[in-house]
Amino acid sequence: MVDGVNEVQAECQLRVRLVSEAMLFNSVTVRLDDMTQTTFLSPLFDFFVEGLAAIIPCPKENVFVFNVQDDTDVEAKILNVSFSVRRPDSRDPDDYYPPHYLQERVYLNRAILARLSNVQVLPFDDNLCVREPCVNYEECLSVLKFGNASGFISSDTLLFRPIYPVNTFACRCPHGFTGMKHKYECDTEVNLCYSSPCGPNGTCIRKEGGYTCICREGFTGQNCEVNLWEDRCGSHSSLCRGDSKCMDLGDGGFGCENCSHASWSSRLCELRARSFTRGSFLTFPSLRQRHRLHIKLRFVTREKNALILYNGRYNDKHDFIAMEIIDSQLVVSFSLGANVSEVSAQIPGGLSDGQWHEAELSYLNRTATLSIDGCDVGVAVKYGNDLNYKCANSVTHELEPRCADLMQTCYRFLDLTGPLQIGGLPALPSDFQIKK
Image: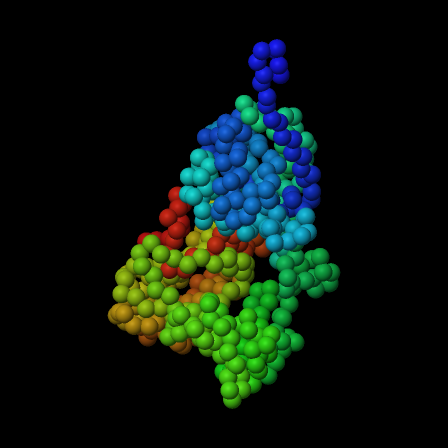
């Protein structure tokens, strides 16, 4: 603009993004506390996108925010911001990170995102699926669908036109399940060990939605198909973990050299043990085993109270499972969404003696069985009190009478959405459902 004496220039950028079904299906919605649309757009919008790019991580051009909407279901000033992130390593324009990955990155890095973007991120709101609206073994997925385009939202530096999606859910029959009469009924679990996928070199262990092969000595691979004594590196070099390198052995077979933790690692440099100081922990993807899981581990400690593992939901409520040492004895607690069930196993003198102990947890259809150090589970569960032999115990989570009708919405499954934490918990503003 020129008035004959003065000249003023301004630059305007126009960005148009097509919101596809893939973008909606692979999106997440975060809740920002004490935030309005106008305040978020200037100047926090760019800070927020850059913060997401830093914690995911990805180029900021791959972060697509398509919804900025006030939460009308609460009295507080909470802003819902929906976004998806395209994978930087893919050429497919509709290849996005899955929602559970985005949730995990935001969940674990909420404090970093708050510092980078000057916003306060609240726990994820997942009330739709937490009530288990699907029937039989169907899994509930919280998804966004296109609702309508809104009017423009303006601030001092940004003019933004969001879409207002509809927050709904979809029911999916997960892998490993089918219908006895019709596939869509999803009322039958398939035993994927039936076809003996591990062959003669391994033992197949059934698990929900799949199987695990326990290989004989000298064999490895998903189906125990790799012979460590005869095969050469070739296509197997990726089996060496960490910074180790595959090395052919002179008399046949292969191994891994330059393993940095050889004394605590397998032949393939797989780390088998980890020590934890106060405040440290390991994070893994969620167990996502809704009605069948099996955990077996060994530990050593002198702490009378300690956390071994924890897996909950992103909203810090409802379903969870925790394994703890309480007063030197082992305790497992879990919830399917409402009440909490607990099972404990005890040995004379306790577990806080600086010696290695083995814990085994089996969970099947609401029944949890816990044992320590190779205990005779049958004897301990049936006669433990009479014999003072309490190294194993079992508990069944009781449902409401109305849950006998499978068409009723009810807490039947262990729906864990958050990450699995081993050895400790992150320093987050969360109310983890643990005892100590």
